[in-house]
Length: 429
Ligand code: ATP
Ligand code: MG
Image (tube, rainbow, N blue to C red; front, side, top):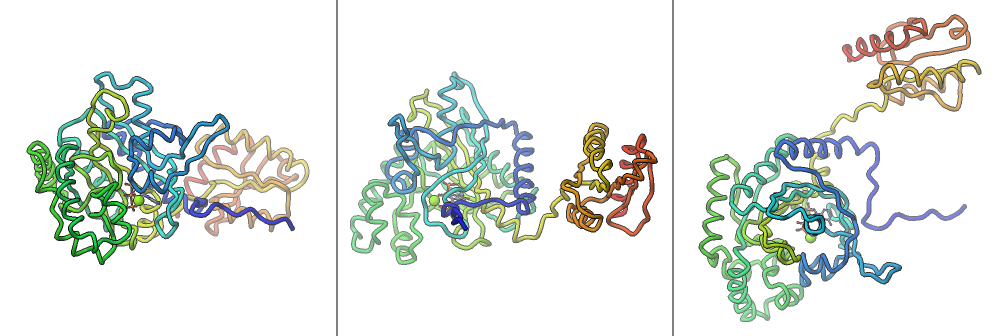
């Protein structure tokens, strides 16, 4: 036998039986986003490598180690998107959408990062990312967080909590960065290899280290929130006050820095204690400098991205979501004439009952086989069409989920009979 082709490591199939949970999340998110005035935008999965270098930052883990970058046949360096924000900002600029206008947008799809695959961490994963561009005040920060909180409520997610912090402006962060580097240099011998590397390129990320041996050193480091500029401090206080007023619990985590360079001021993460080490289900923050960095008019922005695989894992833990049956009606045929007529009849039924789902038995088979298939399809009702029924101009209706007898309907009134029988069957389940 020919050898089978293996899937790519860290890239998953989402199987039909897992789909109910995915769709529950996607549908709730889509409805909620529309209810807050966000519009969907779709951007390519592939962008010029330069976009991510410039937006995310050369010294971030994502750009330095994790991007799927390749040179295409035309000799251009392209990259599979590792996150959604850069592409959406690029699209806003490419399409001339800015011009003093404000935008509330969302975008969903697969992202690619060459990380070490493990539970909750994959090389292809899915995000819904939400972006608000042209809004500078703390109100939008709060509204975005409230939107997340409402989504968790709607989905019945309980074990998620909010952490927030402020990174200040680029300027105040530079000042803090100098203080931090000074401190870390003084303790260079205590830094692990990862932190040594970050010290030169991206010292703030040292604070993000998950190595317990770094804990004490990090706890004693200068605190970013104490070095904020006055405006950022005010902005942050306004966010905290409004969250309190809305009754959204949060914890200020002064060590929360986020992995991408473009963030400024408010950053936040929704964390869970139910998934082990991969504990962030949704993260985001302000990126006031990003659009200018990409060559646009200086425009404030803020956004977040939720990781769908982690949300799916959380929801799966908290109990199954009933998957809807694939079809409502299974059509059993017997005899050559009935088989041929079946194709025609089911198309007519689809015309008459566009909201009902039909599966016609394909490929023949005896009654036993066909009823086994009917059972597996999840249908509530079987419609049986044999050559002798056809002769008499009728079809038989048999409820599949209860022990009620079979009935007959003239073909001319079949659609109405099916509708009635389905309604009766649904009322009894
Ligand atoms: P982490 O700290 O877990 O690496 P991150 O800070 O790199 O996350 P972001 O870039 O902010 O994550 O992406 C937003 C969300 O996307 C995360 O909160 C997480 O839920 C999800 N996510 C990020 N990377 C992965 C991955 N490799 N596999 C699955 N989900 C991911
Ligand atoms: Mg990461």
